[in-house]
Image (cartoon, rainbow, N blue to C red; front, side, top):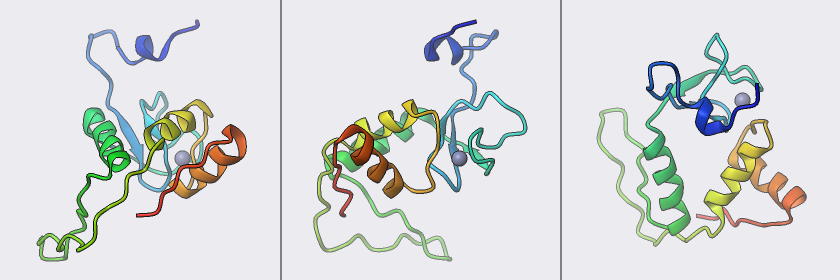
Length: 126
Ligand SMILES: [Zn+2]
């Protein structure tokens, strides 16, 4: 049966299945397989809020983001004393990555493949 991604995202209960991201790769979306591992590379997945996922990508594109690395005691690291850059095309690049039907080991690998195959260069420099 041929289904659209939107149709696929809704199960029989009318609730959206959990949105997953790769812990060691760039997979994102609904995982139709069990066990709960990336369908491409077999590494582990975690459940995240889909809206927050897209918002985070959008904010990175806009150069509005926090450095949410936490110290061992739970304290937040200080923000940098420099202004983050904008990253035009960042969200579109991730959408392109999804369309490839595969995952990547790192966003830099998406960037390189995107440049090679789509001819678009996204500057990931912070
Ligand atoms: Zn993967």
